[in-house]
Length: 456
Image 1 (cartoon, rainbow, N blue to C red):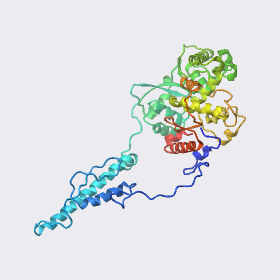
Image 2 (cartoon, one colour):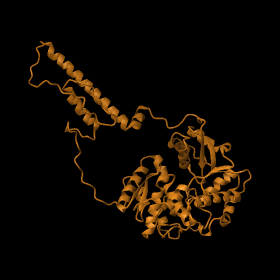
Image 3 (cartoon, rainbow, N blue to C red):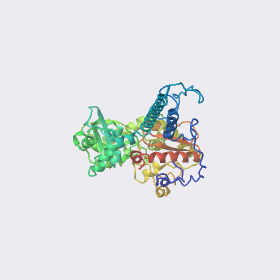
Image 4 (cartoon, helix red, strand yellow):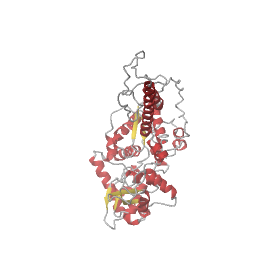
């Protein structure tokens, strides 16, 4: 969660760009450390260290095997120097002795060179395996070959999902081997589209077979639906319509009379009260019956958590923000709840990009622009407007509700995820700490095409 001066264009701008608030002078260049045994060899260059050791080895007999640990520069623990002094007398071996010594010297030198090459090879393999494989033509396969291993995997396609969303879903559910396998396949076949719904696939499918399975109506699950935590109402409507085989317009129309289902009027809509879970419906279930079941479940969960009826709306609003900001990472929800409550207690704006995005109609992202964050007419804009937003921004689960009513102890005022795949998040008390964490997020987003798909 950036503050009001954080510029996301700085974070995700051209490589090498620095955030505008990070205008600190560069540290003076320091002298690069060298090997204590070999002062001419830089420690950052394992090949230089290996060459220095090989040179030293060539001057003495090898008494024991040189051990090189993968991932580390070659070490000299196995190099035991000879006891012979430079001034010592050589044994009288006649005219053939010098020639024999030269032969042994060449053998030692060649052996040392092979040891050096082997050590460098181990280091290169350990630290750059993907590049070495590419050069040698030994690239690791990124796709399964078959059409599944028989283990069912429920894949959820939501309205508005694009290729990268589908690729992430298939990989996260264990259907495909990698994100790239599906993403690259969809890039090569841009005419493919998807319909919202729950689909029964198998684990360990090739990208091509998984995509084909999503196109097959026979794999769509009917009369049963799984709604992920944080799903916005508009996407819940599409999932229900798919499971019930009803026009989505029927679900939307039924949701307008939200108070008839027991949702408080001050919630302004049914949003936030469609509890995320798995539901089985009888054939012929109506839109109204399905919505009532979801709302009743939400109220049941709020009551079980100890939320008073008068506090339902504000609890659901805060829980919905926590859910969207945390994603599926439930371990940080209580800390996120504390950040927002600390900001409210100190009269600070919440400054949640998730609320701004929801107010613009973007329910699939938490990224926003400078113009969107400056738009005070957006009732969900917590950068420009104080306090909680106009209403919930999605449908929270149990963990997010618990994070809203039982926040963690702490003085944090900022947080930012630094790994959007795992949800790893850094919590900060000061702005400077927060800016440093933002730099970590920036680096993560640029590390790979898969990471970049989470940052769009």
